[in-house]
Image (tube, rainbow, N blue to C red; front, side, top):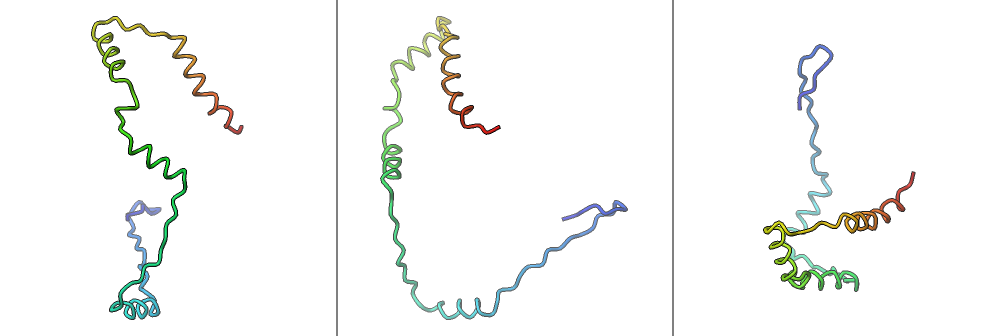
Length: 104
């Protein structure tokens, strides 16, 4: 990595790498020929299981394909009307929890 010095000449900065400690190397050599025993266990909470089950459900069931197609057709035909009041209400509804949690 080059760093400009006071006289604008690049200086090379080297970071030393640490050599493994002798005890770490000895431990690695001791276990190299032995099989590793794995006694780890995992507990999945009910919330995690619910998230897993939700992700397994089809995304197609999450929305009404007929409604999507109707909106697409209205947009293509130029007949889609935008309800600005409803959009504003949804933005405010979404923003309320965000502004309540802010600390000033």
